[in-house]
Length: 128
Length: 388
Image (cartoon, each protein chain N blue to C red):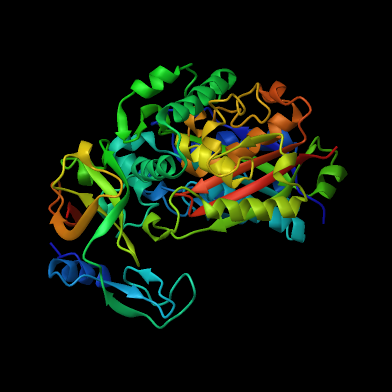
């Protein structure tokens, strides 16, 4: 079987998170995004630089998902959340805490984990 | 060029028809629309057709010409894809072409076959309207995405699962007389709250079903309708479309839908009306929370107030501003690529008095149709008005 091609800057970003060297992309006007970006969709700036991702973020919303797609069948129920890291927000799976105990505003760090169903890499948040 | 008329519309029964091909579903709706309009098929200048997941569900791309052929029309045919707003985008293009004098008659429509692949595969297919790298790979499903928006709404504005349940109860009640509806079953607030959770805080009755179905409408210029003696009293007087960042994580606000704000502002300005003029609305309630976000973006309610509309009885068929008299996506069903035209057909039928719930607004002259794609990264809004 042919090895699937990596997804460019997305997989490089996961590599960086895994190496504890997470980053985001910032434009000249301070708008933050995740890669790949060639232009800031907010202001049109093309002066984009990689900046270190803040060490922790806050959960701004979350959901415990019980009806999953086949790619997450064995993961369910699982918690997907959006965490605000300041200049950027990131979507990830919340682990290391009971789904019932996940709270708005909880402080989390980001790492790379595996999906239980497929073994593929996934963004994972853990309480700090 | 004056505003295009809705000359006729057709909708299949929405529901579980796993054995029916997309082309047969669309043929039924399209032929019904042509027959209702009185327009000869050879007069059709174009078909604009919405479909979202045909490659995944039927292994069928390039559906435009296939669907023109299915309704006996020999005209250029193009498929539009804007997730759940595919058919709304098709309507918008037709309205512009008719106004610009590029066409006199356009068939708009859409179809989706979904239940043949089962719930898990359909959930997977629907998820591709989200950002695959940053959302789907973090486990986001479509109910999950709207659950994230619902929790954010509760956090910022208040409201509860009980308020959402009132929306489901209302839309189920509206669908009781709609023979096209997938679900004709009255439910209670308790039923909705006690139903199994799909993605907290959303449960089974907060979610629209997975649906097979098709819808079509024949739009003509006002001049064509007059010259051919068509009975077409309803005009599309305003069209608007808005966009937003695809991924929720990139939006500054998770409990607002600015793409719909933009679409509504444009459509109202185009029609020369405002939210206060609206008598009836069909909005994209793929999940109960989506109806709340829609009526706020349409300017029918202030931010944070839409959550109470159904609870207070303001948006049911006895209220001042009936919303989703068809039963909405929630009870009527949501064959994704057909939904925008099914909404247009409903508003036209309510305004011309032929819809079974038209008695809710006997003097209604202005209606809006709000069709949203993905987590509202695409939205179309159309204003329809009675123009004898």
